[in-house]
Amino acid sequence: MTLAQAIKEQLADSNPDALYPDGLDQALIGIARRCGQPDLAAYDANTIINILAHDMSRAEAEEFYETNIVGAWVGPNTPIYLDTNFLPWQPEQMPKSSGLVRPDER
Image (cartoon, rainbow, N blue to C red; front, side, top):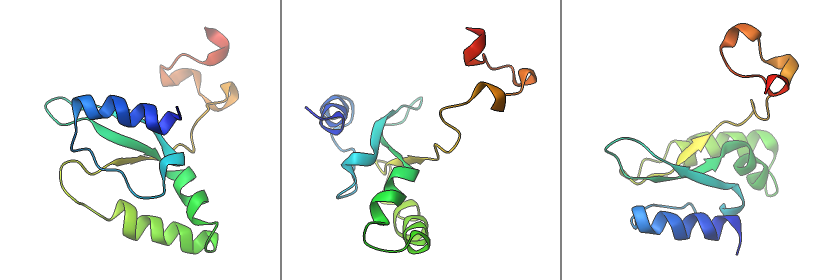
């Protein structure tokens, strides 16, 4: 079973109406939960852009992503898209004053 299949199977239990964009299973990374709202499919934005860039330039992929994917509201079950440029955090990139536990301090 792929990660996308496992996520979809689990999400089907909590939100059978969750939506998934076609052809982007490789970018599906998890389930987003909010108080009082339906659980949603969560996608990695950078992976989506990389998938799109197979068929167009990087700039065209970024524009298509912003306009046609992020810009597409199809109701309360619309997926969310996470910008993961900040992950994984490198210890030297996390200021000690951030209040976050740095990986080297665990």
